Amino acid sequence: MIHVSFLIEPTQKSNVLEELGHTLLNDTERSRLLRYTRTDSKRQLLLSRWLVHEQLARSFLDLPRSWKLASDITGRPIAVHSELDNEINYSLSHCDGLIVCVVSDSAAIGIDAEPKNQPIKDSFLNVAFTPLEREQIRNCSADSLDEMRLRWTIKESLGKMTGQVGFESIVAFCTGTVSHLDAFSPVFVAAYGAWLCRLPASNDHFVTLVVALDRLSLPKIVTYDLAVWVESS
Image (cartoon, rainbow, N blue to C red; front, side, top):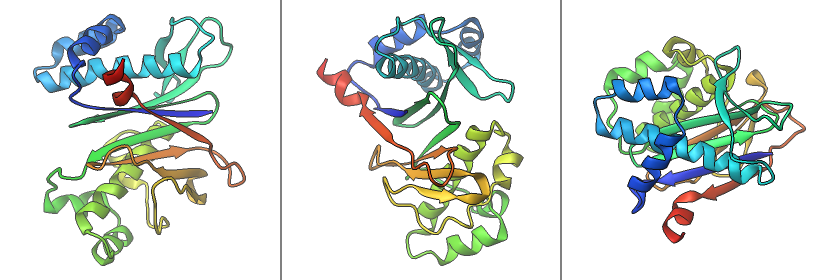
């Protein structure tokens, strides 16, 4: 089971959801919230915490809402419930205008979102991509900046899936074998033993999901647009 939800913001109920998110923070997250100076960073933290708890509740309807968020030995985020023997993997990404969350009861996962209109420095191409990737980005038929943003979401997602989230580790992931990535058409990358899937969560963002499954196990993905649910509730 792999469930993905996304929240397009701002929503008319952002203030209510932020209050709910605040009640779900653990001590570490409360300390982090106090260190934030930017209002948007505080809002994204609160909304993302609400989103992951809401997604867990929707994915496991038979369980009480008493989840605890933690990390495994690699640093990857997990959710723990007193009535489950196994840990639940989850991954979050938030950026201007969008928050996405994925949960899985078995496979390692990673997700990343990037705005399509976010400015990119010229030096980023040389710093963040291998020579093969740089050549492919420059020669792509689509907009080269969009290609760069999309490939960066792949790298970030791979880092989250493996627990290697430092910049140098993320840069080391090579997307050179990924020839094309269409929305909802998963591509298997043998080098990482994982499926890549581009999700059409928003017209203004690139969203990439990575799932650690073998070549014969095509991931089954269920998506929820919680922005629609929030506005209509």
